[in-house]
Image (cartoon, rainbow, N blue to C red; front, side):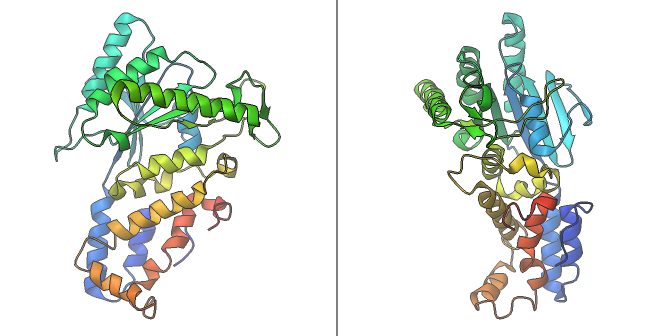
Length: 338
């Protein structure tokens, strides 16, 4: 398989490679499966108090200057702004804390959006990302939003459809104990962040019975006259976003992940988040494009022979999938160990 070109979309590249398979039956089935997931859209509802860093998070993850992205207010849920990045749809909703009347309006709009169903009767919103401000201790309005508005309206499987992320980890203790040279917290701040995350988890569990461990990170930010701050733990956040997304929809992230090396350099080192991201995409490819069909067994038998016939029938696609998965990060493939 040729190297992935960032100017060519993932689906275009895969369709081109599949079209080269000689076996007509397998070729047609793979194309059919690819087309089925090509139109799958991911809908993420992002909310959080003003100043929590929703826009900077979106920009860091997906390299999308939201002010420049085609957007508009949702006609049925005013105040919720819609951003479309190909098959990735972001719904940006204000959090609570803007006054009683505004809070009531925001709550109703969020509830309406969470209860919206698609043509198959499934919730339109695949994932809710709630962003908290790591520089403050007061999460009263955020708890109101999470415990009384979001979780009660998420239906089945809510534990895997909501993420809590604590942004601005670098200023959680007023900038103290942050190692700017290594772009990571010193032990004192690391312990403080762990305690903060555990406290948020406990409060949510006590109120709702839902067990959610928040992710502490920094999206990076740019103040006037100051250099761009580098993100921290952004790969961890991306890993959970991808893993919490239904498998058949994950591949839609491919062409939207930020290609800037510096976005993915710093994390807490507790897991190999880069490998987890890669594995999630690879699993989705295997499950959705080559699996779940009458040729699934045949492809399985190919791998079952110890790889003897890989390359003869679907090797051009399967054998090179890891390479194309690495291409999602364009020039940072080597950084991700690909």
